[in-house]
Amino acid sequence: MTKHWASSAVAVALFSVGMYLHLGSGSTSVVFSTLTVGLGTIEKKAVAVGKMVPAHSVSIKSQINGIAGEIYARVGEKVEQGQPLIKIMPNPTPQELTDASTTLMLAEVDLEAKKQRLTNLESLIKQEIILSNYNDYVDVSSTVKAAQAKVLQKRQMLELIHSGEAFIGDTRLTSTIYAPIKGTVLNLKIEVGEPIISTESRQVATQIMSLADMKTMIFKGSVSEHDAAQLILGMPVTLTVAPYPEVEIRGVLTKVAIQSEQLNYPTDTKTKSFDNGFEVEVGELVIPENVHLRSGFSSTAKITLKKSENVLTIPERALKFKGKTPMVLIPDQSEQGFYTRPVKLGLSDGINVEVYKGIEADEKIIDNSTMGEIHD
Image 1 (cartoon, one colour):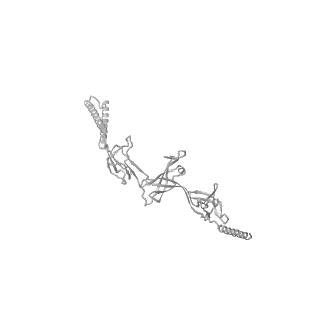
Image 2 (cartoon, one colour):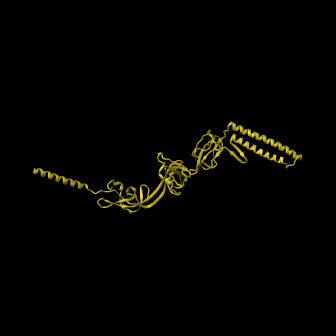
Image 3 (cartoon, rainbow, N blue to C red):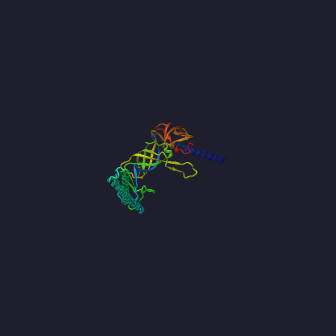
């Protein structure tokens, strides 16, 4: 019995020593991931999504109805101001042609009648039956001139309907459309033989083509109402274009819409709030020589709202909050391995944040994102 008790006591002692050695060997010091406080630049930006377009473009439409006759300029061609673009061939209906011919004939008949009456009065003046200032003679002379003008007008109308060409004095009326600006043909929306609806028609006029000066490009896009409230003309902008994702194009904010043209209603009908899209424009672009922009290239603009340069910055992930108070973890030789220190923050870009007070440059802080539940 005594031997059995002694053996048990020895076993318990050996177990206790083993547990002590095992626990003692596992209590090594914890190594935290640290960051070094440095100087940097923090920018708060608004993002606008849109596209690159020419600063000046015009849509070409016809002032007369007809059919596309000859097309003198094609897509991509550069044209000078006053250069012919397209000839519109008149295509009058039988009714329009009949009406124009009839009104011309009636005007000519009226003119002949007035001329005959004027001739009769002139004969009476020669016979000294009436004076040259006789009221009827004066009135008839005026009506003859008016009738001659009416005949000329009706004849010009008939010529326009027939051929699309006519003269009014020294002015030539033509159905050929000329380039109103110097630029490049962006698109051509008709072909020879297609009908053309004029701007004077009750229907929507046919857009024939578009011209634009491709030397001056701008960005057009939209921002949310929250960003629009902070925008000021002249703010610096950085653009990226889809075909050149690695290239940055710099510009200046030149326009912010006063009124929203687009309402982005939420898909959730239970939500009553909505967001307005405000149009913005970016001009004065500095485009690298190796970048060739085309109208319609999708683009993203980052508008710098605020900027702090050469300031103390740390990643936001390094912060620990006690209520609303931001703090950083400073490593030390204590049993815990760190202590907390409150800091005063400045501008943030969502990744890094400016620190006004609480830490110094080159100071070590613990990356709070790697701490897990150790200090909680």
